[in-house]
Each structure stands twice: as C-alpha cells, then as structure tokens.
Amino acid sequence: MTQAKFYKAFRVALIAAVIACASSSRANAQVQYQFSILHAFGAPGDGEGAGGPLALDQKGNLYGVTGGGVYKGGTVFELTPGANGQWTETIIHSFPDGPADGVNPSGVIIDGAGNLYGAAGGGVNDSGLIFELSPGTDGQWTETILYNFCSLPNCADGTGSSRPTLGPAGSLYGVSGGGGADGGGTAFELTPGSNGWTYTLLYTFCSLPNCADGKDPKGSPVFDATGNLYGETWEGGMSDAGLVFALHPETGGQWKEIVLQDVHCGDDGDDLSGGVTLHAHELYATTQGGGGDGCNRAGCGVVFDLTRNPSVSNGPSEQVAHAFSNATQGISPYGPVEFDARGDLFGVTLSGGNLDFCGNGCGVVYGMKPQKNGKWAFQVLHAFIYSDGDTPDSGLTIDSKGNLYGTTAAGGPYEAGVVFELSPTQFALDTALN
Image 1 (cartoon, helix red, strand yellow):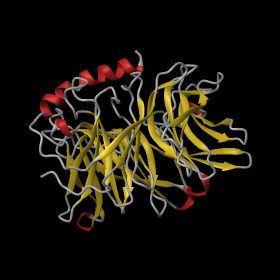
Image 2 (cartoon, helix red, strand yellow; image 1 turned 60 degrees about the vertical axis):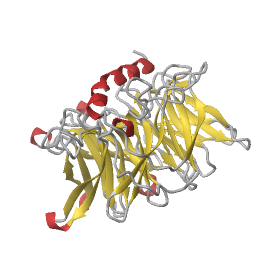
Image 3 (cartoon, rainbow, N blue to C red; image 1 turned 90 degrees about the vertical axis):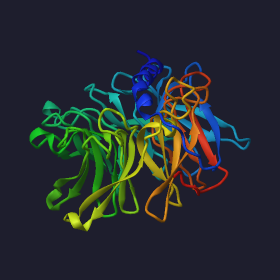
C-alpha cells in the first residue's frame, strides 16, 4: 500500500469520529494567518509524504524528511528561501544509499554547527539506526551512521527509534519503540568521543509487572534545566493506554523512571499522540481521542498540561486545556504542540476542519492563547482542503517572527504532501471561543 493510499484509508477509519464529534460550530475569532505552500512533493525523483517536525537553521533554511525519492527509501531535504519569496528544494540525501544505509527516516534535528541528526529504519541489523549528515564547503553532505540498533544480544539496546533530542555536551537522547530486555522499548544516550559514538542504555520499559512503567515509547524526549528527561509511551500503564514519564539521573550513572500521568481513557483523553512539550515548567501533550464520553471516540482528542501539585505529594496534576468536541475544530490532535515567544500554543489535527473535503476533513492548524481566568482561547488558523494539503501529522516549527512551518503527509498539487507556512497578520490570538 502506498503512503497516499494509507492516508486515504486512515481518513475512512475516522468517519465514525466525525459523526460522534459533529455539532454546530461556534463563532470563530477573527485572527488572520496567511497560508502559503512552500513546496509541493511528488515531482519525478522528489520525496513524498513528509514527516517529522521541520528543523530550522540560523539562516532560515528548513530541513525535513520524506518517503519516496530516487531509491524509494526516503529523503532528507533542505528548503532555502529566496529574495522573491520563492523557496528552493535541495535533496541532500536519498535513502537507501547502500545496503547498510537506513530507510524511511523519521525526522531530523540540527545543532549549532549545522549538522543534522535523525533516525531511520534499516541498517546492518535491519532494526533501525541513528545517522548524522554534515555539510561540506562544496555544498555536499556526508552521512555517518552513529549507531545500529539490535547490536546487543536479544536486542537489549532496542529496535527502531523516534527522532533523537540534542542534550548537554552534544549528546543525543532518544527512545526505541521495541526491543529491550522485556520487549517494551528503551531510552538511550549516544555520546560523541574521539573514537566515535558510545551507546548507553538509560532505561528498559515494561520492566514492571503488566508494563506499569509503560511500553512502546514514542516521540522525541525533552530535557528540563536540571537534566530530567520527559516523554510518553503509547501502551502500558494502569489502563494499558500509555503514560507520560520522567527519567531522573541519579548518582552512579543510573536513571530512575517516574510515572507522571496514566492515560485513563475518558475526559482526560485517550491514545497519546507522539511527543511532549516543556513550557514554563509545565508539560503539554495531546491525545488522539477522548475528551468526550470515553474511549469510543465520542471525543475528538484533547490538549492537556501537567503541572506540579503540592497536594499530591509534589506530583503532577493534569488539566485539560482544550477538548476537541467539535469536528470543525479538528479531529485527533497529533504530535507535540509548540509555543511562540508570547506563550501562545499551536498544533495540528490529523483530520476534521472543513468537512466538505476528504470525507471527514483534511485536518487543521490551530492556535490557543492563555487567558487570565486560567482557560485557553482556541482558534482554527487554517483548515486544509486537500489541494493545499491533507493529514498534517507532525508538530509545527515556529521562527522568531511567529511564522509557523509544517508538513502534510498527503494532498497538495501532486497529492504527495506539502511544506506550508502560516504567517500571522495579527501576531497574537486575542479572542476566545466561548
């Protein structure tokens, strides 16, 4: 099944959610964002189905990954802005470039020197790998495989990986969705040295009975100022519906897991959707369902935050910032949310929005602004109509001017996805939906 056909099938599977979520729309706040397609995928030799949040360098260039490409194993691309407002795409790596190379990359990050780091499937053990792409003075990029998963007996180091995170001293931190001593995935560190990169296992998930500590971690973990690592799992926990966790470094190089929030399949959400965000000492995440009548998808998903609560032994307290109970607001918020310099929150949904397109809507970009009463104003900034994109399934990237950049997995002029920009004509969200 091609990627485009997969997403068409996925939309059909969500029709029940549209029926459950449909209700009369409320008056929309009139904050305008200008939508632009920066690049449409699908030309001969180009990639298709972009995924993973985009990386932004100091010059304003964007980097991302796709499927497809010359060798059909995916690409890493660069988009460079021009003086005339046009953007130029350069494919800087095509997978698989040899039998030991990766396939189907899951996203890239960038360091201060302009090196890109990412994760992909494939590799010498066919269990995934972490790679680096380094720019040369001649405009060429050099790929280095930093680590191949399943290099330890019984794949104790994990199999597969989400996009890694840059940590202190140039180390990379990440999670693997499978493998580990108990098959529930791992958290790991890769440390650079004079002889290459060294792998360190930080934690093995599903180490507790009934996987109470979580199973199948997803998304890029995030750091706080004291060195704690945060993330989420898609399975495990008390209700086997996933959880949000913290990994705390202890003396002797050991890391301790703390379960911050179990997903219970109800008003607080169902089915975590791939990444946490740390902002102002609080954690934010999304769920694809729930927020309504439980796990029957009567709710279209939620955005929630975890804040420290002194009344619960200094444990976190969950607050639902927004429940997507209206299909025109979007269905199934997905990926990590992102904040701009003013503290406004932005994200995407897989479907919903304009219900006249894609059977159940092609997805939306939404914004939320914190209010003085502790609640959030919500606004749909753009509803996709297939010709401009379909199924935005990755978090957004925001520059210093408040421009939003993202990708869609399908739709667009060539039906293979797009890179898009939303530029605010009014910088902040000022009016709440009541």
